[in-house]
Length: 177
Image 1 (spheres, one colour):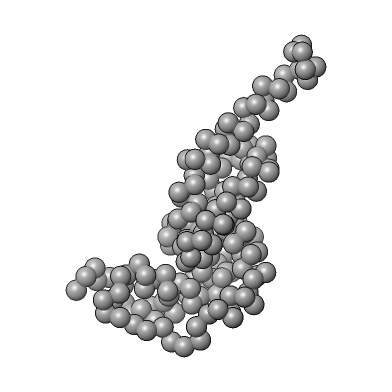
Image 2: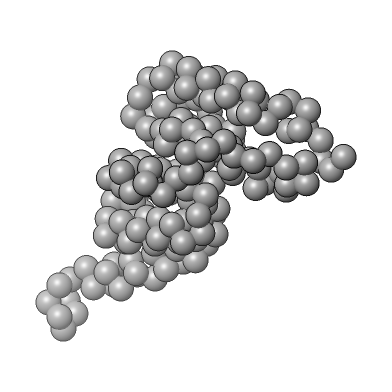
């Protein structure tokens, strides 16, 4: 028995932070990218990524036991985003422009798409990003957001129709005409 009297617990505790650090370094960019797609703001995306990693560290023992730790982290990120969005809805609406967004033929497709995504409700925005950007199945998005498959399919369909109407099908598929 080691001098600290804890048996074999001491090596396990010393390995946990190191494995979290490795996970955080490996996942930080992917989490940031997803956070940016969800919120459309670099500072908020950084905060959301850091909050997600802090929550993962706080519950690292349970998180590291997950079969798919990347999916677990995406779930934490998405739920954190939705919870913060609900809490800050009043502030976001106060800073939001109420007029129509100007359409420019020379706008970068990414900026245009992010602007269009920002026009969707938070939950629908999360569903579209997870379903089509992160390429997750309807079942995994439903499980992630704790809802039924039909609750994912309907808002995704309506959101895509809204995005197509706002952006136009031809504009989405042309790279730089």
